[in-house]
Amino acid sequence: MNATTDQLSTPDNYQEAFAKNIVIVFLGLIIIFINGMFVFTFSRYPVFHNDPRYILYINLVINDIMMICISVTLYVLTYAWPYVNVSFCCVLITLGSTTYINTPLNLAGMAIERYIAVCKPLHHSQICTVQRTYILICVIWGVGAIPAIIDIIIVIALQPSSFFNSLTYCQPFIVFNTKYHIQKTIATQVLYLSVVWITLLYTYFRVLFTAKIASSGQYQSSVKKARNTILLHGGQLLLCMLSYLTPVLDMLLIPFFPTHRTKITFFNYLLTNILPRLLSPLIYGVRDQKFVKHIKGYFFCKVLISKVVPSSAKRQL
Figure 1 (cartoon, rainbow, N blue to C red):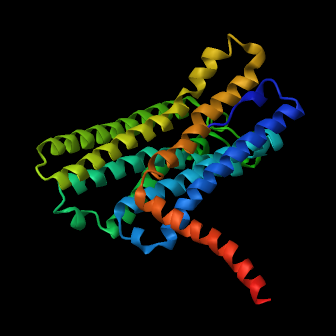
Figure 2 (cartoon, rainbow, N blue to C red):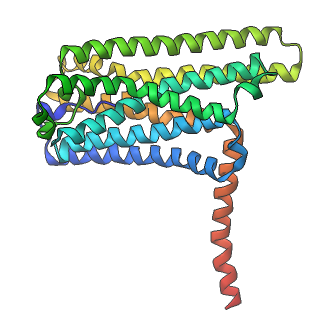
């Protein structure tokens, strides 16, 4: 979620700043378009509406759309409108932080759903109902918002009320800059990521164990698919965790190439924040045959209609 911090030290010239913003906005629009196709397909075809797996996945997709919108907005703001109202900035950072934390939590929920489907197939329809799936999504958003709410409470407790009417450079490390924020961030990230990784590892090995004892060929095939899906969840989580490497890469590379500070931070932001969000829908969504089938069917029909209708209209004339 973090935007680059180039502008705090050495501002870019107009051409370089314009090029960076064009690249970031263009890639952001591509990500939103790809994810938007999945959201549109889900909303158009009722076949997805009663499957907890697709409901959880589309929540992940919508969350990623919101996250990339906020991240790109914060990046562009640092160039176009560096100093904004603190209250407005807190809203952006709170939404960005919540969507950022929601991603691993949602992946853990998807892994649990696959675990129940494979290891407890007779109880899956009773446990993983549509209503309970939406309740789980509400819990994910509620738990994901807790760290951001704590940040706001700390600011309210330590800062005067006039602080929220002032202007600030809209970055989390500037608005939430006390030692309490640092301690809270470390504690919550360690706690959340530990729970998610334990969940993914437990569900994977349980599914792996079930695959070994599966006797039916058809059932064994579905177990292997579930195991591969959980592995993909782990891959997506690793991609999400690349953002934790942003400050590390900055600290390692900038001392060796101080004159290229802005270029280094820009490419680190692309590598650790934008690229994972571009790969995530391609890794999971495109491999899902049901999604691909409906996306191809709808958009291919639209292309055919757009070509056939004008020609037929001409013949009628």
